[in-house]
Amino acid sequence: MPMRLGTPMPSLEGATAWWNSDGIPALEPGKVTLVHFWAVSCHICHETMNDVIAIKDKYAKDGLQVVALHMPRMEEDTNEERIRQDVETYHITQPLGLDHQHAVANRFENEYVPAFFVFGKDGTLKFRAAGDKGFLKVEPKIREALGLPEQ
Image 1 (cartoon, rainbow, N blue to C red):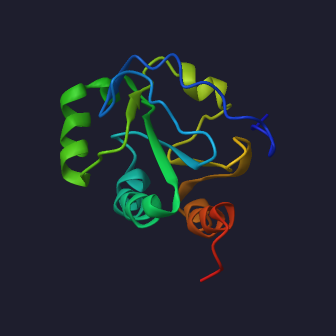
Image 2: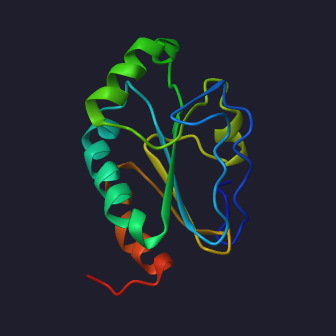
């Protein structure tokens, strides 16, 4: 069963490694948080990645914090060199957890990539979506959680 709206954000513990962060990122309370699951073998993940990065950059000044989690779909996805190539190609600078045992994904009750979880300033789940169609609703939900007007 997918995580219910209003659920507090689960722990990010269990990632096999963290990049762009000294261990589990220290998320600031009172900020909106986007948690983004992706995999190197996922075509849709690659199609949406530039837009995820643009959203991260656009709303950082408004208090958005973003965490990426690489969730492999197959053994080949655990190749860290391939992940590093994507990190460089897409300029992924947010904390990136390698969730190669699916420990974090299981806590989020997530089995999809790409998947997007928006947590409000109160630390509870406000929105979740998966795939390219679900991604289309992410930015409006982030704006809503940030208290910004509709575009």
